[in-house]
Amino acid sequence: MNTNSRKSILIAVGVTITVTLWMLSGLGSSPVEFSGENQLNVSDGKPMRVRVEQVRSSEVTREITLSARTEPNRVVSLRAETDGAVVNIAVDRGNPVEENAPIIELDMRDRSSRLTEATSLIAQRELELEARQNLRDREFASRVEIAEANARLESARAAKARIELEIDNTTIDAPFNGIVQERGVEIGDYVRAGDAVVEVVDIDPLIIAGEINGKEVSELFVGGRGSAVLVNGTRINGVIRYLAPVADSNTRTFRVELEVPNPNGIRAGLTAELLLDGSRIRAHEISPSLLTLADDGAVGVKTVNSSNRVDFHPIEIAGSSDNGILVTGLPDEVTVITVGQGFVNVEQQVEPVNYNVLSESTAFERAN
Image 1 (cartoon, one colour):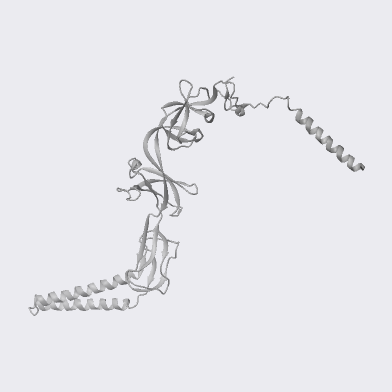
Image 2: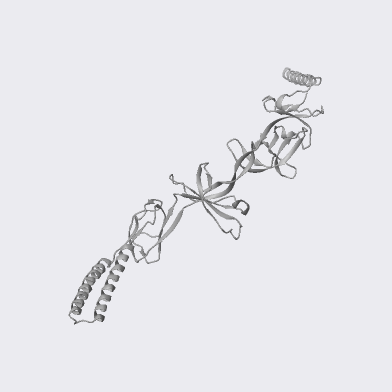
């Protein structure tokens, strides 16, 4: 055997001896002990120490939460009221337009000459009527002839009014301040009376619309307050402007509309969460981290009773607050387990320790 082979064998034997001695050295040592939140000795039979806090209910406004969407305040499809070719488009899609401002202009065709003709005819009919009245004064014209002359004058005036209306209708104006949403024509297109040419939407104010069930709709009223949270987290406040008097035949829910000011031009069609002020109730403000699940899946809170045993109270979430959530279903005054609720069962004996007594470094532990 050469020198290199002997060295390799010696190195392997040395490593093996070292590992064996290291493993044997731990056989007589004590187990690692944990303190604070990691300490959980289940063999001493003493009550579990849990952190608790006394919580009192207060009167609050119940918050009704709905899935909703943003909608325009008004949508109008403008139609041509006379025939003609499009000669000018004053406002393009996506641009704002003011009330009574022109959007589409049609060609005049022969309307100017027809207006001149109608004006001249009126002048002629007025002279004829005046002549008949002079003859009547000298008893050379009957009342019937005067009536006929007056009728011809009124017919001429009506013809002029019709042509003036046609001329007015060659310009399609905005009915309100809004935004041009769609335009169905281009310059050169020929439109007839009744053809849809442009759609205008009004998004200020903006409408937040949702559906509410029959149980909660009785808590709302037109003029009530509410807010909406948009997909980007923006929260906007408004007033309820509409509650449907009849439920939808398919969903059995009622439409509710919240009107909010929209000076910044928030778009319609966005998903939102609608938060409406409901009835006044008594509720507790707690942290969401205190919620636990019962075996049957009910959501609730674990508390400690006067016998220092654990109780479970099913709750309903009534809304949210700056510091947590608002829940109902608890007694007016209750001792809530704030730390350790996940390690104790209902009816289990515990040792409750108030928040200001138990140190921050120890979440729960067995009593000494």
